[in-house]
Length: 172
Image 1: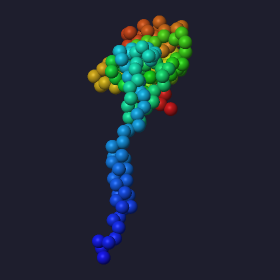
Image 2: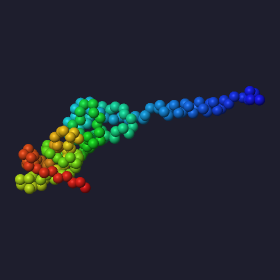
Image 3: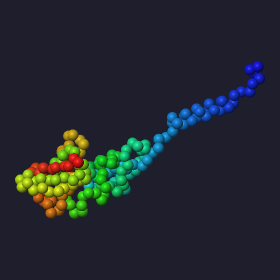
């Protein structure tokens, strides 16, 4: 007789637990991490500090982690997240005492790349380092920053002002 059997309480509890676990898996919060955002406009070459950045919680894996002791390689606007491609280490490849000159740089150049600057009128070759690369905006000017030694900074600056330089970037 079917009505004399005990109800299947074990199956009901197992089904209820299965539903609770499924709801938790579906609606659980994503793991969050702290990521820096600019709270004011940050110029090229400016250090990231607690005065010009703040950390906000974002989902894990959304953006690459950024080193806290870094220098901006491009202008960062207020409210923008700071991306790994926007910064370089504070103790970067640019030696102390070098000067940064604004000049047209190839689009493939990235901050920290070693370059050779050829002065077109004299043929002189000067070593340099890309301090800031060309912005990704196709309507922006193609100028970036090139760091050169203090001994040749004035010569390169005068040639760059007259568009008499060629910048060579190694691809390997």
